[in-house]
Each structure stands twice: as C-alpha cells, then as structure tokens.
Amino acid sequence: MKKLNVAIIGQGRSGKDIHGAYFVSKRNVYFNVKYVVDLDDYRRKISLKRYPGCEVFKDYRELFKKKDIDVVINASYSDLHYAISKELIMHGLNVVVEKPLAKSTKECQELIDLAKKKKVFINAFQQTFYAPYYDDVIRIMKHDKIGKILEVSIRYNSLSRRWDWQTLQKRVGGNAYNTGPHPIGIALGVLDFDPKLKLVYSKMVHTLMSAGDYDDYCKLIISAPNRPVVDIEINNTDAFNNYNLRMIGTRGTYQTNIMNYDIKYINPNENVKRVPIGTFIEDKDKNPCFCSEKLITHEEHGTYNGNAIDVGTALFYKDLYLALTKKQKMRVTPEIAMKVIQIIEQAHKDNPIKRRF
Image (cartoon, rainbow, N blue to C red; front, side, top):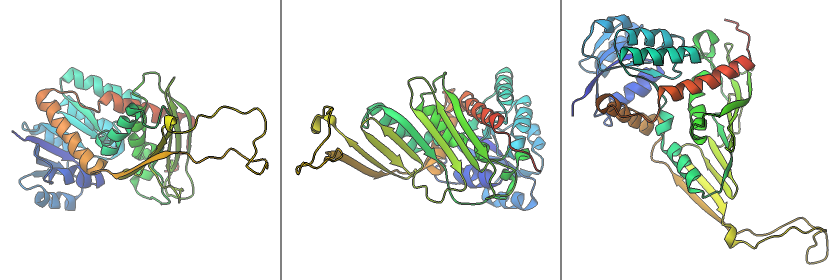
C-alpha cells in the first residue's frame, strides 16, 4: 500500500498534538509527513526531529512549488482557515481543514464550489463522527432499547478559564466555534441530518470567568419535526457536570462521559400494567399517598475502547485515505461541516457579543 504525502500547516495544539500525534503513531499506515509549515522557529526545528525526512517552511506559500503533495492539513488559526484553504485549492491541492471549516456559510459554500471547480478534495476535520461513543449513540437510537428518544442533552462543560487566542472573536474564537463543531455535529447525526432541522433557541454570553471577548457560555437547542430535542451546552462555569451526552427515551436513559457509559431501562411487559385511578390513592393503612412501586429495571455499564482523539482521528484518516485513493465518500462531508457553521452563525447573529479586542 502506497503512503500519501502530507503537508501540515500549523504545529499548535491541533496540528502537533492531534494530527501530528496520529502521523507519528503506529496507527498511521497511510500517510507520510513530507512538509511542515509554522511561523515559529522552534516549532519548525523540532518538527525536523518529530517527522524524520520532512522539510519545514515559515510560509505556507512555499507548498505551491511542490508537486508531490497528496493532501494539506490546514491547522492554522481559525480566522485564517478560509483564506489559506482557498489559496491551496486555487493551486490544485487537496485540503483537510481543522474545524471550523470557515467562519460563515457563505465562505464554506465558496470553498466547496471552488474545490469542485478545480477538481480537488476538501473536507473538515470533525473526528467526533468516528468516535466509538458516537457510533453507540446512533446504534442505541436505532435499536429502540430505551424506547423512542425524546431528548438528547450534550454537555462540554467545566469550571475553567481561558486566555489564549481562541478567546478572541477577531480570531474566530469562542465556545461555539472552538468546541461547538463536536456537539453540533453529534446533534446533526442524532437528528439523522434531517434537512428540516433548525436552531430553535440559543443563548451566548461572555462571563467574568475568562479573558477575551468570546462566548464562554453557549446554549443551543436544535430539533426537527418528529425528532428528539437536542440541548447543547458548552459552558466554562459549570462545576458539577458529570456527563457529556444523555439520551432520554420513553423507557429509560443512556448516559456517557465519552469513555464510560450507563444505561437503565424498563421492559413494559415485565411490570404490572397500570390504569388511571380517578380518585385518591391509599396505602395499606388507608392513609393518602403518592404513586409508589418497585419497577423491574435493567442496567448496563461499560467502557469504550478509545475516544474521538485517538480512535476517532485514526478512523478519520483511514476514511480520508480511501476517499483520496478510491474516491469513496467519507462519513463526514464538507456539506455537514457547513451545516454546523450555519447553526453557529445563526447563534452569533441572535446573540451579538461586543468585540473588545
């Protein structure tokens, strides 16, 4: 199997610690890091050791001179995603863009249309679609174990502060753009990518917890006709959150913190059938009481073998290899990534936060 040559733009948290970590891992049997671009001298220097045999550049435009690049990973600052990706496409290069794909729906559509025109590949790196727990969520929904799903709550919460570049709106920072593509992507999958899904409520606030001028509290509610309600929260002021995703069905509940999961549900046929009583209820001593019974329930607990960072990234790149070499359609598409941006863009429009930097 021939390995494909990769160029990575950016050696920050994502470019180095997610994409780069995969490329130097044993999981990677598909790609060879040929070129690395970073503005920082030290990061370029250590890249020479981290990716043996690679060339390093300060300016990504140096890549335009190369004829042996199969795909470029654009892990630059978020506010540069659109402009750099556009230039790469114009020069006939395949591109994977770190999320967010771009700032606006208009920019996303322009990149997608341009890639088609130039006959090159573009996609967004949204590896949560390949995480083991995401697959299990979709499986449980289809299996009907906990009944018809009424509500899905997704929480990416903590009690923490930030003061890096992703706290700045001018750099397309904020919880919605930084973290939002993960839970919003899950929401789209839970809603089966229904074309009628829409953002029905949003609230975005910059609290006193963090520096910058970004949304460190973000609440999004998304739904579609005859589909579950999906409640998303990305919040830096929540000290007691104990789950990342919870599904409430008509017969029980599923909950996960990404690595571990719990399910508790009932089988209606195993419990006494109840009919409504039009008068008061008494206990055995004739005292008024509330409804009370001992339900027969079932519980399941388990641990997932990996998460979005390790397994999800590896499966994304396997899917990418097949897309580039066999023209197979990937699980995540640029159109899905654009729908994510459409929701974020609408939330920002409905909740403008004053720019201070």
